[in-house]
Amino acid sequence: MKQTFLSYFFSYLFHSKTRQKLIFIATGGLFLSSFALIILHSVMGGLQEGLIGRSKKVEGEFELQLFSSNPELESKLFKKLEESQVEYFPEYEIELLAKSQSRITPIILHGVDTSKKLAPFLETKDLKGLVLGADLGAKLQSDFFSKVSLISTSHTDSMLGDIPRQVGSTVTDFYLSELVEIDLYHAWVRLSLVQNLIREKVINRVRFYHEDDLSRVKKIVQELDPENLNLLLWSEKHQALMWSLNLETTVMILLFISMTFLISITITAGFMIFFDKIKRDLASFWILGASKKQIMKLARVFCSLVSFLTCLSGLGAGLIALSFLEKYSSHIMPDVFMERNLPVNITWEGIVISVLIPYVISLTFGLFSLSHFKKENHSFLEIVRNVG
Image (cartoon, rainbow, N blue to C red; front, side, top):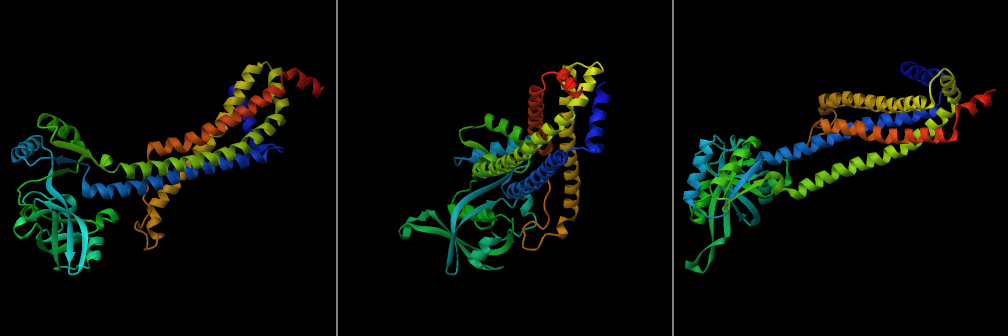
């Protein structure tokens, strides 16, 4: 019975001379909703993932901040990390002023330990001197082998009246992360130069670039000194950025929900007309022995299948389009874009959202149309009498 009912009305929908074009227009809009939602969600997700990935490449997945200068604590910490086989990168981070000829600008200087393994992004850089962020170098108008003075206003020498300490270094390399907040303010130099400036042999940061090490590092912090060791995740450090990215995704989804609501108004009208056209056919199923409850249940299944298959086909077309976009987008993007190709990040969350949102809204309005039809046609007996 169920198979006969569904096959009959699907054939009626596609092959009848009186088939409703309004339903095809509505389902076409539903198809485009699912299609556009998976493409936009995947491309935006790819762009956001690229931005986060470039930032984590420099700053790491998480970092450990040391609040007090305690060589004994540092020694215990490094020993524990090595015993746990955790890859770590100690440094001293300090905010300074950089001066090159008559140009001066604030910078964030990272003193890295060149006697140990360097962070992945610095492995190819020359740390015999100063490595500047690309935009910072342009701001100082510095070139290779330019002389840059590093001035610390928080460290002074009282001999000549609290004069800020400063050291000089030669620019030996530049780093381009394609993130303004890094390239415009950050610089890297060997740890010994920074320690010479502050006159202390200490570190205040330990960076970690593997997310899998987080649980082991948390355990080590609890064993040593939780008061003087602060574990800071990348997402906690950039809460404002994460909030704005989540807001961007939420607004995008809300816009598509609004668009799907407009399409669903057409779906409501289309199903109302369709059910009015086939009410005599429904009555014929009743005459053949089906109860009204069974017929209404099968009509709901029909509405559900139409909505789900349309959304699923839109998702399939979107995934095919994304595969072509990922493969050939490098040939369509001009040189002025930071990303020469559109990054694509297909996730299960995006797939579920792209099908579920249009499907639920469409099904809701479809069932509303069916309930309206049910109210107007209380009994199939009246329909049969009207035919007679």
